Amino acid sequence: MFTIFPDASFGAARHFVAGDRGVSEWIFTGTTSDGKKVEVNGCDVFTFRNGKIAVKSSFFKNRLA
Image (tube, rainbow, N blue to C red; front, side, top):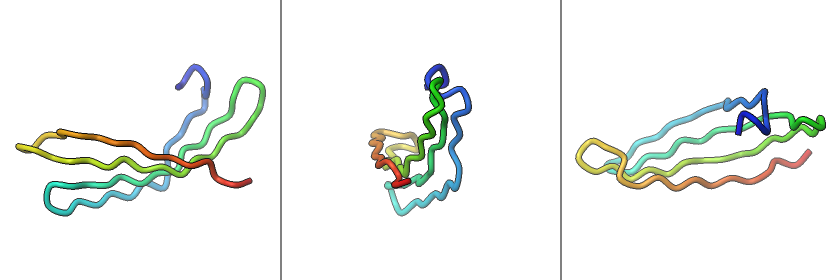
């Protein structure tokens, strides 16, 4: 990812945990080598088991310019 987006950044992070589930929301920003700016809304959904991450699913959607 950092090869494609040298200035990659994850910001505006918010985290929630309820029981054995958790969510991390974020906004990814970056610029490709040809100057195209990218902004993506995303989240990771976690399932915890025995104090560790058992499952992680990631979802994202490009932000409208």
